[in-house]
Image: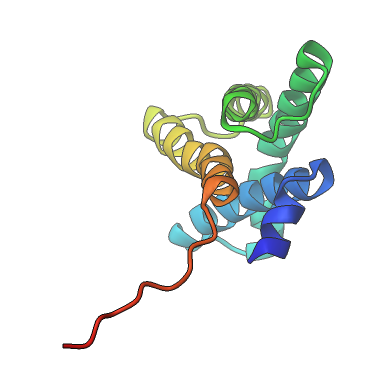
Length: 136
């Protein structure tokens, strides 16, 4: 578990995790609608959001001169992922129904912000010895 957390604390691992989670979001959404080739469909749905994720990382890197590894900067990544994803979908004639925007906002928040929160909790979790039980 510590190795996985260590990887997610590094920019490369964290960026890869974000990209994978965006693809998972798209793949699950496509699967729930039982649409065509799952790989091509997931990538077709994911690409605008992947661009948005990259923009979010770039914004944080340029403006904060740090990597978006923590929850706070993760909010910027989530917001950019959602906004740029929806804008690119709109520009390319893909759907941006209000229900899709709402679902995407929630799922991407859980994935992109929640992942960072879980990593932060892992960082702060003290190493505790197992609880002792007293025999009577």
